[in-house]
Length: 168
Image (tube, rainbow, N blue to C red; front, side, top):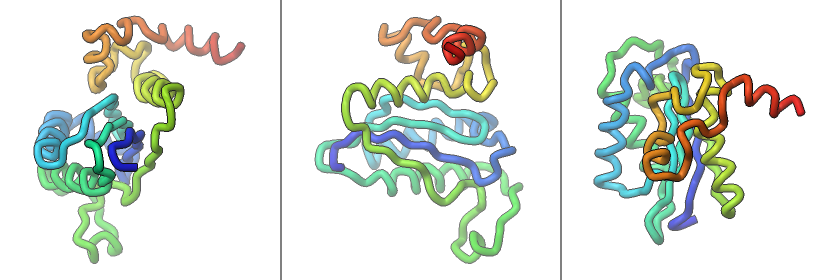
């Protein structure tokens, strides 16, 4: 959908690795460079050790998410040491083996869908047990949104608050 808003999930090939947070500065710089040549707005983004969720708004008339992700993945891969196992299928395509080939993509349909996916991004580190509170996870645009007054710092409470709410 040209000019649309998209939700993405992008995973490392080896979900036991923690490359994304180990090399967070390099990932951020790679995204900045890609945005310069292929602009998009970052609505929300959370980076976990082995995967990330992002919501992008593309420029009017532009629907090329694939090129942007290819550039981000390739740029990130080029900047980190070669330590991963590379399967023959990836070697034949000159791929490093860092990323899963595909990514999950969802076009945001309306305001309710938008809100649900932004919230999903931000709650993800709590859901996976990395932190007790959303505000404790450093690799997220949640902090930008708190500064902008969109969320409060204590949004979603703590893990124990979430557990009670889920049980009801």
